[in-house]
Amino acid sequence: MRAALSARGMVAGLSALAMIAALWVFARAAPGLGAWAFGLAGVILAVPLALVRAHWAATRRSHNLLILNQDGWLHRALSGPVLRVTLALVRALILTFVLLVRVIALIPADWLALVVAGTGVPLGAALGQRVVGAQIATPHRLAGTLRIGRYIGSALGLAAYLVLRDLPVPPPEGPFRSPLIEQAVLLGAQWRLLEDFALGQLSVLGDWGRWAAVLVSVLGNLALVWTATGIAAGLMLPRDALRRALAPVGADRPAPVAIGWMTALATVITLFVYAPVLAMAEAALRAVPAENRPSDVFVTQVEQIGGQFFEPGTIAELTGRRIEAQANAAPEARAALLDQVDAGFAAMEANIDPFLDWYYSLPAEYGRIAHLLAGDFESYLAGKMGEYLSEGDPFGGLDTALARWEAAEEAMQPALEAELESLARARRVEIAPGQPIAIVGSAEAAVFGAMPSISDRLTTRLAITGGTAGLAAALTTAVMVKLGTKGVTKLAAKAALKVAASKGAGGTAGAGAGAAGGAIVGSVVPGIGTAAGAVIGGLIGGLAVGAGTDFLLVKLEEALSRDQLRAEMVSALDAARADMHGLIDADPSGK
Image (cartoon, rainbow, N blue to C red; front, side, top):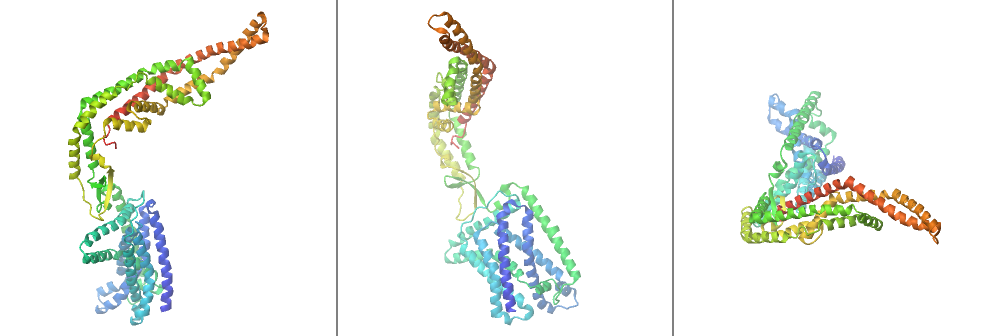
């Protein structure tokens, strides 16, 4: 029997490793799987666990039933396999559910405990067979040695867990397709966090507290290792032991009727109880907001501000109070600033027509041609647009309005800072070492400190957009960026290119007319000659007729596109003005 047990142990050990490897693959793929995969994994793991439990119960009851009357109904119920196997299956499904919740979070210590416990069962069983196997009666020997193997495997698994339990817990990976699997992963990860918290609280009590912490850790992980050893032991059961597990106590084979009953009950339990319960749990979790799901029951939700923790909503409250204080610091100064911004944009809009007058002129046309050849056409056009729109320094009056607002803000800063610090103090959360937390928001400590000046805030934000220092220059550049993003520059470039593309016919006609005129001049002017006259006339005629043609083409394009280009520029300025209003009214913390 010892040789047979060793062979089965080797096969069982390899099978356990293969099952654990498959479980690892499942855990890695879990975020993309549905709840059905979780349930199927639980059923597969429950089968060997239920069989080893049923075998153990059959062996134990063969002794316990000796005190019962064999003709009584209680003896018949307890000695039959149906009740025993049904209870073993229900118990196995519950334990494998707990096992999946623990290991699906991919915590290294849990997986090491699983591997050591599973592979330790064959070694422990072989050791038990060698040391005390001969002292156990033959009918009970296999169950007894497997029990010893489970004890030894569980002890080894717990030791491995204690060795690696200080490894950092990896964050759960997502996104998750199934809320049920998501909650399993989060609860598995939080188990370690809760354990760390409990052990940290006990450890401060001295030596006996540290020993109590180890005991708590051991007791809290018994279900994990005991389930793993049960699955490994189930893989070691030989065929005759499997038959006895499904047979009445004292019999070697199950009766067909009993097999039918057990199959029917197992079907009902798995398909009509276990699966619907998982489906109901999946549906219930989908209907609950993420922040109210079970995984958050054990976690303290906090916001982090400057390395300290506060109640959720603190950032919004502090930010709202800052915005309110900024708006109420000097309403008339804020209104004057907005009026100055509006006046600047109105001046820019008034500069649109002078730009368009230049744009639809021959000098502008020839300048564009030169820059087309130079390769900097669009940047040249954007520069000319900015030059015309900035005529008269539209935003030159911002400094006075800003100075009034800054003076009002400086006057109210001390009182505001004291108020914000008081609000933050009242909402601060003290976190004990190891206490599980979820950071739902974060901000810099400046959120309850002094506000930067309004000019610094606006210049910084506009510099991010326009890349220019100085408020007026930054605002002007931001306007040009807005014109570019709304396609105004490209629209103007497209119209100019259309005119340039139409020059071929006009220039050829002008050259032909000039050559004909030059030939006439050359025939009547002594010393010039027809050929020389044609050259001179072609040059003069080409310039005259070509310029005239260009003038007509430019004016034709102006008639066709000026109104559209002007409307696009006005729209871009309106959008830039709205952006500037938004910057003035934005969160003063700069967030």
